[in-house]
Length: 108
Image 1 (cartoon, one colour):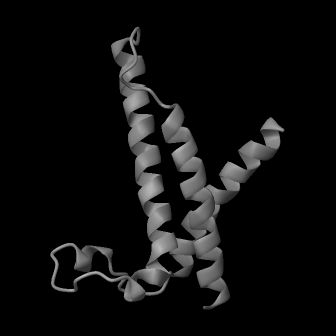
Image 2 (image 1 turned 120 degrees about the vertical axis):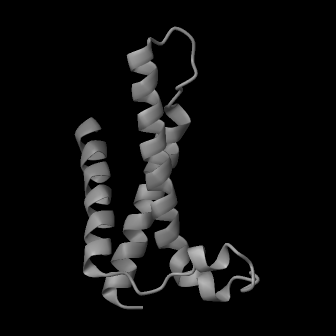
């Protein structure tokens, strides 16, 4: 693994951990929300879910060739990484990880 792979993987780990934490605390179906608040909660939940999926992809990509999955399955091509993480991929994941870390430091 190159340094870029390791940084991408670690950033993915931070993003997944925070996304799962934030998803646990969103409640778009709770009582008493107005239409605007409910829409905001749904958008927040969808955004954190997408970030969790993206971070999980960064974590699992190096393991995909070793997982016991049928290559004939319809989902396999969607999960199999077609390339190593690029600098762009790593910068996006690392940018989110740094924002998450900054928020944690700011909160104390």
